[in-house]
Image (cartoon, rainbow, N blue to C red; front, side, top):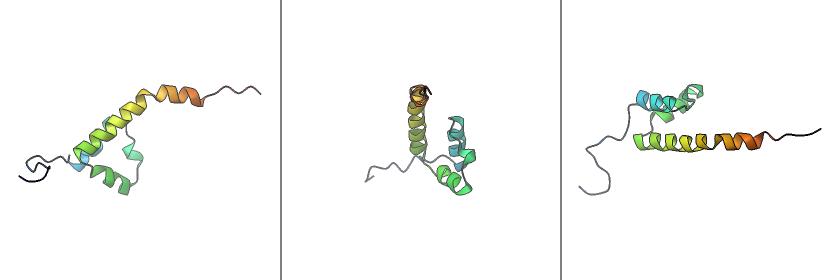
Length: 75
């Protein structure tokens, strides 16, 4: 087989599965427009895993970010 792609494994989850995986990870996919949901539904499994990985990393630092956003202002 030439090239770097394997043709015996389908990396795409079913569209409903992609949305379900993203939803379960806490992505607010239900708030997206129909067109935006279609884009997310068409993601490959590696793309879904990448988004979830990024979300986990952002969530891990969320407390730090939120704490910095809430500065105390003395009037």
